[in-house]
Image (cartoon, rainbow, N blue to C red; front, top):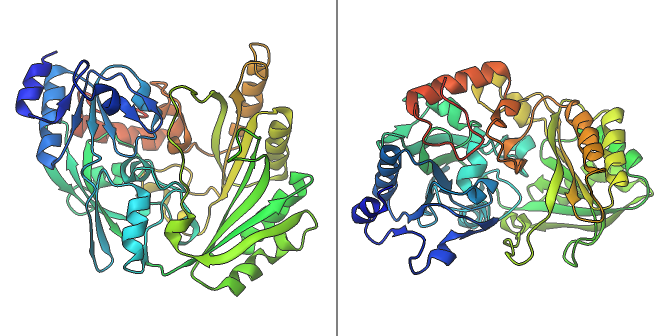
Length: 441
């Protein structure tokens, strides 16, 4: 591997083992990487040069923006760090965002213009990984996925060419970028169509008692709720002082109409085991969470479980999810409402699976010695597999799997076949394989 050639082509941009700053450069939000080299790109030309070198050497590429992906822990390969490509340009409701920007950065910039783009929950998450994987966020019922708001992209291909991708210029590639992950190139700029957004109503409801009747009421409430409302349910163990044990419902209402938000949440507030912790008007950037970076000295335990996209939050699904949480002391249960604008998009319009899902559910036990062992682990896996089987798909962005075959679980057969054809056209050598990988058709 000719690292010297890469260093000569991109002077001052390449960091390799043994160089000054290597240890700092290989730290990312979710852990510590062991790549062969890192290119800290300062321009699109830097990205193109890095891609051409990697393709010529047969070296796989990992693209880093926010750095939340588990793929950063896979040894070897070339990491292309887009952190410096974080410009945000607002032209009316058209927002052009550099591939290294984070959602907190974007939310703050757009708030100054009275605009918003539906994103995830965490400020430090990168625009690239979230959008390319679909992007379920707080406005999913009103505006759909982050990928649904994408109208164009600047892409560095596996050949090192820089192209503009829209539905008009490259329809199949544009389709694949909306949910097909980072399989098709390095997106150095995302073009979104933003929405008017001056404020949101943010609500936190504390819960006690049995979660089953509460979840049934939550499901029934969302069936009739206006699209302005999106909710989550979370039940977590006491892992640290910043995350006290217990169950909560969190809700976001688009706009500043607190009375309307309260009216939509009334069926829940009327329950004896639900109490209002806070309901107030706030800026959207304040809603996004700050997730602490991984601590190398205290690594997170493994996670035994997964996620699924449910067409219906049935009584059976509720029972299985709550029973999973009850059976595993150190486990987490999380649900988010879908439907609305998310379901308006025909399945064939994007690569994202299960557009008919109405709920997203995730559950998992933390693989902690003394709580999970070789005997209990298969039992937990079997319990999760039974829950996953109720769903219509899996959301790749919420999976920490680095299994090379995991993508086969993400997409329906017809979607995967089409993705493989797009991959064959744009990345036949599978240079972009450090992701939920779609192999060339």
